[in-house]
Length: 198
Image 1: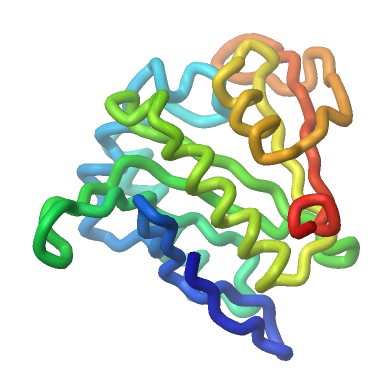
Image 2: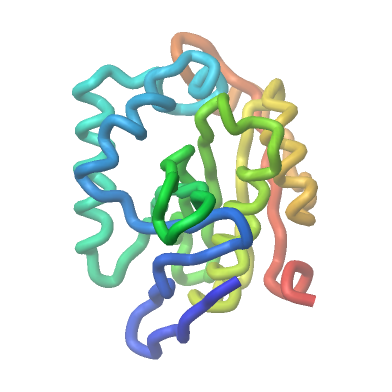
């Protein structure tokens, strides 16, 4: 795993981040089709606070990512998950989803992690690999103390990713979010820097 140095003046990540199988990089305008390919699917978004996206919503999402990249200090690090290709450098690389780290409470050094993957790549450990990398970066590069994540209580796959990251379930929220026409129950997970980095 490759990391850069944290700036003294403003929190930043050394993007792109790399894992053995993935590259995590900033989204670009050219990523629209690949993003829409997963963000428009019911099976991807049924437990999320957004989606399934229309074409216009996916375009707005990309625009928001680009706006966030220009923000100083940057608060949202939404990154494209790129599956490394075989053979020559760059060949066959494919955008398979997104992973994000939001600085949700700067005063208390707290971030929130989230992820979404195209169903073709579910069950292969990519979400865990991407989430582990960005959580590591949040602690080691941004100096965060605590990283949280939430999921719909029915989203067993997402809960498993959080648990494999070493996160603890800290809360159960009943009917805490109104999503896609119904009230949803959520789990809150969290991990501290000392727990993750030891």
